[in-house]
Image (cartoon, rainbow, N blue to C red; front, side, top):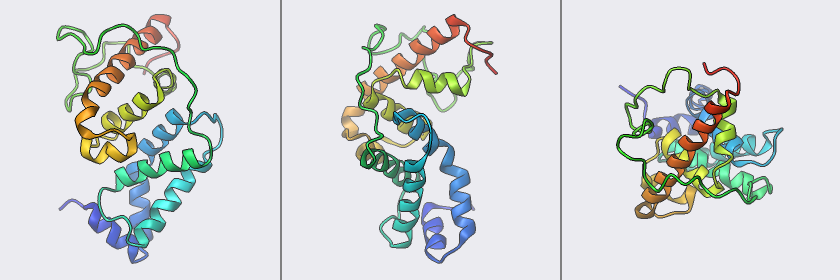
Length: 195
């Protein structure tokens, strides 16, 4: 029987350190990606540590009982914003591929639950993924990570991305288009191995 977020919250509330460890193991990677993609700071992770500490404190206080991943990512954004590390620098306009990928585009559907494999030799390294993400305007970048990496449904993403669920789809498509266009540029440059 799978462990639910409610079970995890109850265990953390009882002081079960193993529940905290399990939560870290499950969700730290996506929180770290959101932090690194969103923060203008290139070193240090004080905001990320602060977000984790706040989440655990809020669970123990009974303020968080639902989706823990959504609660964590929301606290990452709040911690970055509080510390002035939330990147609000202007970014270039999005590439001109249109709002939606054509059905025959080789990247179409890459975000699906069962995505098609990346073309051989074209899978970007983690560093390249981060470079590409940081080229996307901040609000779209956060939306892309929250929806497509963290796999949060639109309703759970609302507070994090500050966008109602019924207004997320066009923005998400634009972010996906920008991501794949920028990845194509990285691949074309031949920057480093893709393993």
